[in-house]
Every structure is written in structure tokens, then in C-alpha cells.
Length: 152
Image (cartoon, rainbow, N blue to C red):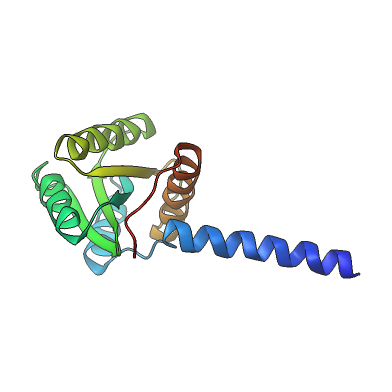
């Protein structure tokens, strides 16, 4: 019985560490509205979660750089060094390409960034499902690449 309790505790700690590391994704109101509108209009789109290595000035610069991609892109801050980005995309592959292009764009501007992504409708049809998928992908990429986010 003690072994079962310790196993359960280890699983809960793993989930808690994941949520703390990945930001737990709670999109800001602007992103929730953008997600809700696109779902209501039955539009495919992508949700990107961006984690930055740098200070607040870099976060603001990154946000401005992403917003220059067009009026279809919606950006909101979701953590001390994290942004949520809603982008138009017709397929999961298009969402992944968008994430890679934004990583390169931000790197070009001197801002280390790592993205997790999710595609609607392939990976979910509500904000929570999409956040979970993008957060899990971000966490996995962060772990595999040894990415160091900005200090909170």
C-alpha cells in the first residue's frame, strides 16, 4: 500500500512540475476571444505557445515582431516569459511551419524562443484541449533541447 501511495505521489509531482514548467496555459482574454470566434466560424487555426529566454523588454519586442505578421495573428501574454499566439492555419503541418518560422524570426531579432503548437480541429475543438496539446509539445521540446527560459 505504501508503494502505491509513493507511486501516486510521484505521478502527481510529475504533473505539477510539468504545469509549473510549461506554464499551465491559461490564454488571456484576447486569445480566448480569438479562439472562440474561430471555433464559432468553424475555421481551422493554430495555437502557439511561446517561451522566451530574455527579459521583459525582449518579451515586448517579440510580441511586436509577431504582431507584424498580420491582423489575423492574435498575441497575448500568458506568463512571465510566455506568449500565446493564435494563427490562421489550414493543417497541423502549417501550424508547425508557422511555429518554426516565428522561432527563426525571433532568433533573428536576438530573442531566443521555443514554441509548442496545436492545430484545430486536429488536436482539439476547444481552448483547453488546444492549450494542453501546445503546452505538452512545448514542454517536450524544452526538455529535449535543454532550453532555458527567462527567470520569473
